[in-house]
Image (cartoon, rainbow over all chains, first blue to last red; front, side, top):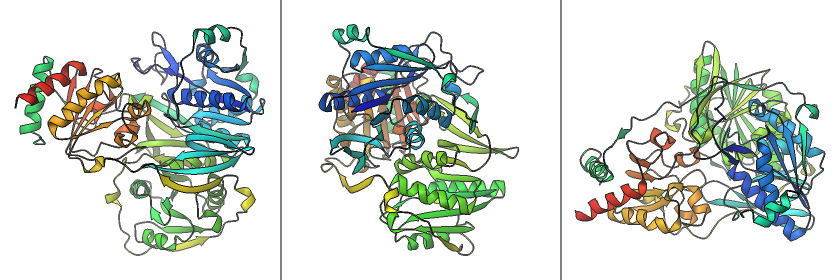
Length: 255
Length: 325
């Protein structure tokens, strides 16, 4: 099975975010990591390959730094990487980003395309479904189990409030993966060494020849206004704890 | 302007977030002097269309077909594309449900259009609609506007608007059946039965007090710390998704969009940053306490009381103080 897995590089979870005038965040001095939902998609791709043989291709779009995330995927076991280079990738709207990814992925003619269900930075949650439409593939989203069967797939789709549904679909197909579907592996030293010999093909986004008129524009990003006024309790841990118990007993009257 | 709301049902039962988005659509239609129509899509759902017609809107569009009895992304996209072509809306609004996430971006893209997803609100300023959504897991908000020609697509997050604010109509709106063409071979995925995993061992929706842990708890061996606090308060232990993904607590302890939605009288969020997916499941709680080392954590946006600090110092102090009593 030839599997393309889309991985995005996002600011590290604990990175302090400073908003810039360009409606983005200051990227200097912060760490970046693989978007966590995508790490589950990568793991699922590696497991499918180990079970059914095939090839896993990690695709990521963004500036030079995203190569580090592709290398991490290679160290975990992906066979090769494709870097769609664009310093301004974060300014693309969901459809523009998906068109660019689709142009690069389409060349690979994969049997299966996987992504995480959403990114931890922009959080559009649309890329996978848009890729399916643009590549003409059937799709299923928020997947918690994948079984390959008779040239197709049987997948467990998560619904809301604890419900699930099995869905059958033919290959080639596109799936978005829910976090928690598997236990993500760590890269081994051997994997890290092996990754050094693996290929990362860099294509500029421009060279893909994608034409796109933006469908939406971010006017401003800002720290959200609070919906509630939080009363902060200060002091030593012991003092803060005592104040909290006092408040819960006599002000909120909930304990 | 023409606004079209697409509602959601399964087996002729409403997905209640449809009415939250209806409340948003009614408000928006009033502010922009727009015409509002709403779609009911499925099979055997005429009664739902009748129910919807009693609310304040201009028309209900009833879209029924044998191939729409079970949801599929292909079936819904092909059918709704025909509905959009007939109704010619400028703006299509949908609730941001798992099902909508599965087809709405595809529907918009099949028309060459874009979608602003998971909005928490909107503003109507100087004749322009500005949609507000969250980014960076709720740490920032963004004002987003549409570009290019209509139709535009937008979805509203669960809990962003109040379903109890839906206005009744002065008279019933007309229900117009819309016929759509759909062939079995156009539907590439085959939906099978719906099911729930092994019976839920705890029903957190009934607990008056919940102590919920997030990533900040760091390791499974630290969970008893929070468990003890829950016990001392007479409450139940709950968790954010990552904790259940790691297997540190069973999935039936999970609060949020993929877990349970709760509204206890007291909710203590310990080491939970407050990503949108978690907050939608607990923001209706009467009193919310957040303990987090990051004073900018979005959880503080919904908290009544906050303690900024190390949970490994604060929780033991709470346990000690409660034990004394």
